[in-house]
Amino acid sequence: MTASHFLVTNMANHVVSRAVPPSLSAKIVGSFAYLTVRDRLPTILTKAVDTIHRNKNKFFEEHGEEGVQAEKRAISLLSKLRNELQTDKPVLALTDDMVDTDMWNQYLQRQHALMEENECPSWFKSPWLYVECYMYRRIQESLRLNPPICDFDVFREAKMQSFFESQQAIIAICTYLQGLNKNIDELSETHLLDQFQKLLQVALWGNKCDLSISAGQDNSQKSSPVDSLESLKPFILVDDSNMVWSILMNNKRPGGAEKLQVDIVLDNAGFELITDLVLADFLVSSGLASKIHFHGKSMPWFVSDTTREDFEWTIKQTLAANHKWMSKSGAQWQRYLKDGTWFYHDHPFWTLPHEFCDMAANAPDLYSTLQKSDLIFFKGDLNYRKLTGDRDWEHTVPFEKALRGFQPAPLCSLRTLKANVQVGLQPGQGENLTASEPNWMTSGKYAVIQYCRPQREQ
Ligand SMILES: O=P(O)(O)OC[C@@]1(O)O[C@H](CO)[C@@H](O)[C@@H]1O
Ligand SMILES: [Mn+2]
Image 1 (cartoon, rainbow, N blue to C red):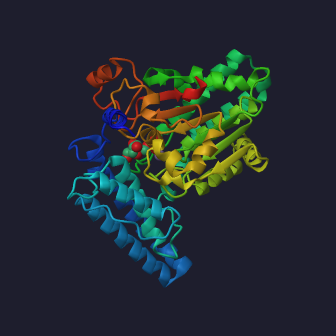
Image 2 (cartoon, rainbow, N blue to C red):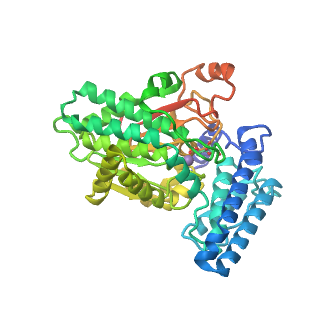
Image 3 (cartoon, rainbow, N blue to C red):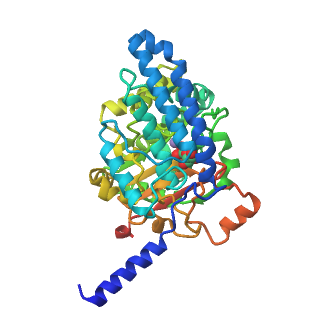
């Protein structure tokens, strides 16, 4: 490489590195990240300790004295974790032997290399995305290190409660779906688009129901979701649903893609998961898609995120419901899973701390799987933070730029805003919102339907 070439390349890298803003971090006192790490994460840890303690008798009944000893050890590990967090101790390497342990410890080394000479990764100095994901992985470690309670899900009760308390809304949306499916073949394209937008918005607002932002407080869905869509429209800051529709319509038009595959990267269990299953059912029953691939988490995550157990339990619960249209929906969903119309995956990458622009390098198998998709929906706020790298972007930066090369397929984020990162807005839109509602990025009141199509296809 000639000197001038080296200089140009270096400058280009410098320009690129300068163009990527810093990660959100709790080192900014008073920031949402700071308040999350200082207040909300310790609360979540305390609730986890309480949940394990409340199950002490269950552990004894199932495992005898060994179960009680394991309960004690898990609680002491979680209490130690809470103290490390609250006193900004260094982030520690993981000591369990899971499939992702090495990836986590390599990431820790990578974070260390980015710090100043005499500094090391810690809760209030490292990127918020990293330490928050790390906390949930340490909760997993505190159980994995203590057989026989290794598989205990500290968040399971909260996820089930959220499902049971949203029954009215779940009945309403299943009834709506079955009514739609009855004459779906007679719907004109205009009516089909109208129904698609309705169910897309139901899935979008289903994301309000997340137990991490509420630190486990009640977030059940009380009223019928379809009735409130009109009143919620002004709070959708970006609505690219028409661009998403054009991808789906390709499949319907003569000569369109025969087998249109849609992937849904899931977020929360409970009511939100039902809205995702309803959307997926509609996409198949309308003929807009022929295969749906769901992607869940391989361990309990961010309190309410969907695991394989949650996914299977939710479908079984819906099937077993003593409500005709819920039960009919659950039966259909079970059939889709059995006959290969629907698939469920839980790649370990979704519970690593990486920004999605690192996926191709760190999980090439997952990236190439996603490249087979015709359209990928990313549900929720944490996925949006990883899509954009949880960085302090200007609000008018194009979504595609914030993705920094992560474009396995056309993708659409369905996200209610619960963290202070938002790109792809019009000039002045962010400033106007800040003037009228300073916490517009973290209240969960606003949302985006934000789409990006890979460069090569434009
Ligand atoms: O991904 P979700 O369920 O929509 O939200 C996850 C979340 O509640 O957790 C973090 C705050 O602790 C933020 O990313 C966001 O507020
Ligand atoms: Mn979540």
